[in-house]
Length: 295
Image 1 (cartoon, helix red, strand yellow):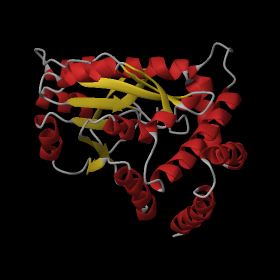
Image 2 (cartoon, helix red, strand yellow; image 1 turned 90 degrees about the vertical axis):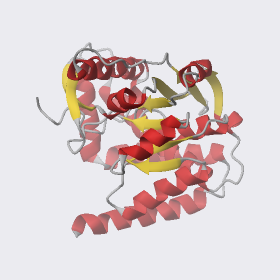
Image 3 (cartoon, helix red, strand yellow; image 1 turned 180 degrees about the vertical axis):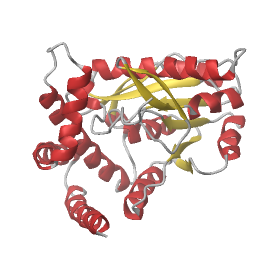
Image 4 (cartoon, one colour; image 1 turned 135 degrees about the horizontal axis):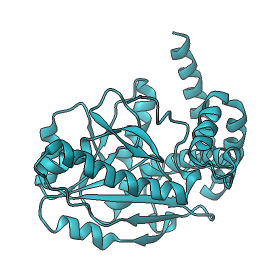
C-alpha cells in the first residue's frame, strides 16, 4: 500500500508538471526538463546508484565518467517525458522538426519486400517511444508489442501516447496469433528486447562481456513468420532534434538446431545494440538492473 500511495503521488505531481508543459513551447519545456533531470539525478539515489554501478562495471578503461553519463541519462529521460506530453497534446505532430536526420529507410523497405512483414527491433534507447511513431508517419502500417504496466495510471498514460501518435498496441501476454497476423499482412511489428525480465522466455548471451538474460521473442517470432529483424535506433542530438538509423536486416534462418539458431541471432541483435550503447552511452537506460538474473 505504501508503494502504491507513492506511485499515486508521483503520478499526480507529474500531471501538474505536464499541465504546465503543454502550454509552453517545446524548446522551453526541454529546458525545464533538463533542469528537472539534474534534480532527479540527485534525489533518486537508488536508481542513480544502479546506473553508476552498471556503468563502472562496463567501462573499466577509465575514459568514461560514470556519474556524468548517468546524469545525462536522467536529463535525456526527462526530455523524453517533455516530448511525450507535446505529442499527446498536439493535433498535428511535425515529425520533420523532431527528426532531422534519417538513414537506412531503404533497408526497412528491403525487409518488407519479401511480403512477410518486418520486426523493427530497438531498445530503451534515445526517445524510443518516438521511433515507431516516426515510422508510422512515413506511411508504414503495423503495431507495437507492449508490456502492461502494473500501475494502471502509468499504463493509461503510455497508451494515450501511443494511440495519439497512431501506434496500435498488442500486449505481449496476448495470443501470438495477433503478432503473426500483423506480419502476414505485410506490416511492421515494433519491439523492445533489451531488459532482464525473468517472466519472459530468454537465454544468456554476452552483453558487454558478461552473460545477460535476454528475451528471445524477436528471434522466435522471426522464425515463426519469416519476417526479417530490422534493428533501429533513434538518437537525440545536441540540438534536441533526433536522428533515426535503420540497420541492415537480420534474416533469421532455422539451422539444424532451433536452440543454436536462437542463440546465434539473439547474439547478433545484441551486438548491434551494444555498438550503439558504446557510441551513445548516455542514451540507454542504465537504471535497469540488466545483469540481475544469474546463469
